[in-house]
Image 1 (tube, rainbow, N blue to C red):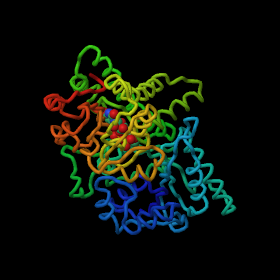
Image 2 (image 1 turned 135 degrees about the horizontal axis):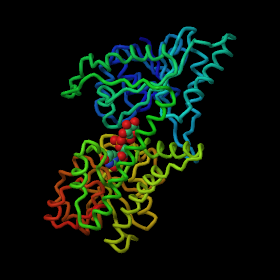
Image 3 (image 1 turned 90 degrees about the vertical axis):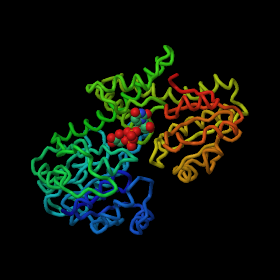
Image 4 (image 1 turned 90 degrees about the horizontal axis):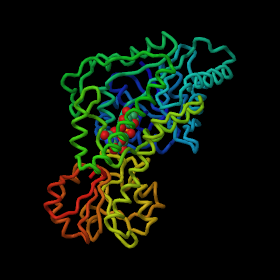
Length: 454
Ligand code: UDX
């Protein structure tokens, strides 16, 4: 099938690569000429494990362009995967979505085409996109658009850092549409994925016990709400375990054991119960804010989601409070941050806790040093206003520091030579913001080990 993808961010590029890998002819469209040139030359605009191999494997089915005219007219399915960044009110900014919808209407073929919203968009956007495509189509052709195209919602659930794995082996595929023909086109598009009939790449073997993938066929509004409700629920789980973590600290309980003990109840589940600094990234903050904003448009309070947001905000403050408690004075101190990215295996810094923590420490007069295995270059590019001294190694971050904070749980930080790091620090204080380090080993090495839950 011929497919176009508008937007080559995490979602667009991964979706494009995945569909090309499954055998479809995919053209990715992006307005950013530099990015398109780089992609054409085989360069990847962000760090994502296996994406390079995956794009190379799918290369024969994949092309990139800045021109709608080179992609849309021959496509049966057009995905919109543009950014919907948060605006000042918490509601997402839809200008890129609107531009994409207009561009589609201006170029869509005069045959049946499915326009798919892949970006996370407010509930009701499917209808809105349809009206923009229709208007642009009718203006161009002077004809009624009836039956020429239909809009579907197909939310993504991929996590950065495991985007390819999540795309190839999803727990479910959700397709929302108010039109039967759309459902049929989407079914044939995803068939190899649903039936798991494709050959698994060597670098990402199919998980054992992976069966057929369930397809959830819903109406448009339900599919749109599924996306928000899923992300908000995961965010709730994290804030919940962080709230219990605060109590665990007071009563002397171990939050990791508590999380395991409750998580093994199948009704609860073990995932997304990792206590610590809390969530960052481009999705949870934005999607919970959007859910609250939508609820309030309908006179609802969404108080549980609001509370989860507040708990998450406070976790970042607690890092600074803990350091203040321990060091008494932050002015003139040097604090080292291990990790800048919002989570391991990505160089994405959007809503990264490290940025907030660094700002707060700097405000209090501390000097901040940091290391990240992949995100430092991006940090320099995007946050020249935050005065952090970047270090080539984690050891250099710790040298002469009064405290080190583990912000992002990169695997290699657990295996550092903590014994020799201790002797290079001014004070041997470690705040393990992700409950990631070997507490017993650090205590034995003579560290003062702090965490957000004990
Ligand atoms: C998320 C969703 O998981 C994905 O389904 C969605 O469609 C896009 O948003 P992503 O933001 O890439 O994915 O990362 P995710 O792995 O969900 O982590 C989000 C944040 O929560 C990270 O900052 C992570 O460190 C934090 N987190 C995650 C915890 O603090 N505890 C956990 O147990 C899990």
